[in-house]
Length: 374
Image 1 (cartoon, one colour):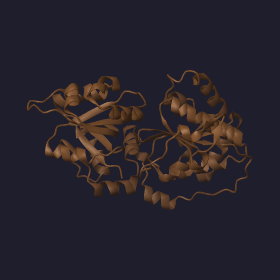
Image 2: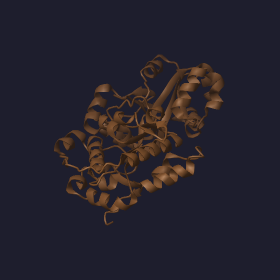
Image 3: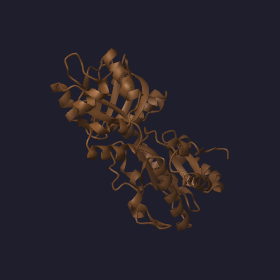
Image 4: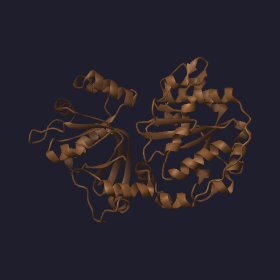
């Protein structure tokens, strides 16, 4: 279970620090002289050379106790003036007075914020604390103070009911609170129809698409995962396992079935996108796997993308309209996008000789909304 930590960023001092190291990202080049070569390597592997947000806590007994409990992948939310203003994940932590003085100086007591933690996948939000209290079963007038953690029992109850905390906060921030699903009740009611699908195998083209998605994912700064059974594949001399995560490490908010999706992009501990490559006649299998994933994680926000030749987009649209997939719980018409083989080849050709400049959004924004009329 990923723990949830709450940080208050009120007052002139905290506001200044927020501007210095959350709003203004920092780079490894800036802090290299304050950390060891091993720490530098770890952080570079996490951020893939990108700039990062960083925060710290003074070494009071309470702060140190809370900081010690932090693990990679835990959630951290910042509170300010009645609202949650940022959500992210803990990427790494270290204790360093020298680095803290460089980043933030010291306070009036001569202390500095030496219990340091690096943040990844941070998103600015504006979620009233009353809504947070409602979902985490706090009293309505609860106000976060200092640096603390959500009690484990309270969080367990939340996850059984809603699953993905990060996705839920983003949905509320986007004004989609009315779409939030209670997992246990809906999963018990949801029935996925299983089709006996005839296969028109085209392993070479499937392997090509899988390889190009691996390469595009890496070029855009993500970690990449493909199913274990596919990791030994070779395409044009490239063995897939040499370019992907060794282990996926799914959490309660990342359902285990995601490990069987054809290609998954991940940054930090968040899924950036899940791709299913369709190379069969019936178009069912990929949609079914994405439907299963959506059923288990209805409050997740990452894009679900069907990859197929452009001339079958209409058939994908027709399948998504089936009652099994178009029910109000799954809402696959809204969740699934389409990315053609042809567009993937164009992107790969454009960036194969220029590995820098490609971003995740540049790829995902080329995916098309499935038009239900054609």
